[in-house]
Image (cartoon, rainbow, N blue to C red):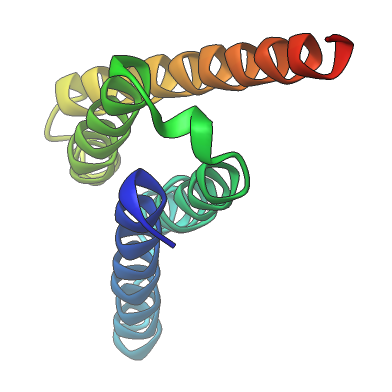
Length: 129
């Protein structure tokens, strides 16, 4: 695994390790108040990033150009803002970070959709010729 696929996978594994350690900490403390943030870290961080990594690995041409770089940046910043933002929202210390992170995470998925559609179009054009 190389290029953007590798970066997504490295971060997926990092998010999974953090999420698992956080889950163990919450369980040991018998305090699951931040479970929504923990769940979003596991789903958006670990699962989504791993799926992104596998797609970019299986479709190497999809990693070319500016679009995948924008996707990566939006995805990373989205998780970095959304997870503490959810923790802040749950503990009633403000929702701004959660909102910004959520919008960036949505933007990241829209960018990924564009990458997939671009790859699908290119793949269909190649098969047709």
